[in-house]
Length: 223
Image 1 (spheres, one colour):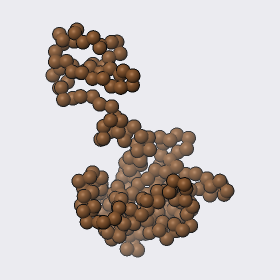
Image 2 (spheres, helix red, strand yellow):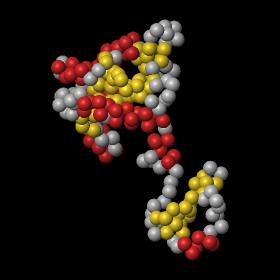
Image 3 (tube, helix red, strand yellow):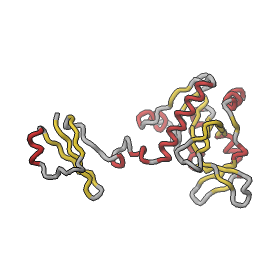
Image 4 (tube, rainbow, N blue to C red):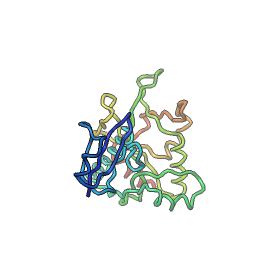
């Protein structure tokens, strides 16, 4: 055990480790703003932005996406769906990439008691079309559709996109009362009708979405 000293100098984290209390009096970098804590030498501090595991937490889009996954799992459980988490680490993904010669994307859950249907959960901001403001849409990456289609072709399992609306007033809030769905197959069938943004995103009108968890059962019955 020893003492970790942390100073923020010109926006950079400066750290040193002192083995015993008596040696602290010889450390001239200590000021009233210095952070100090006791711990093992290996318990070094780090900036979130410099850590591969945690840096995503600094992105509000990432955080709201994970919250949407947690909400979906909670609501799906209440509706009687048995979900299996799909591990997103690189080691698990190798099982697919070693056997597929195309770019693929994996969802978040399998619905175990309904044909292992794959679900990818999203939290999307809904926008109005400029020319037809009565119509609402959300953005979806063109590449993601292609990757999902490649995965679906490989696994022979239907893939659904589950969508929660993100509040425009508070970007950290999810509108929990309604869950929307659209299948990858539907997106493929309709994509010629979708407008595209300059950033290679489809503008998908919400009129094509299905509301409620019963849609999973409807897709299962058509398998």
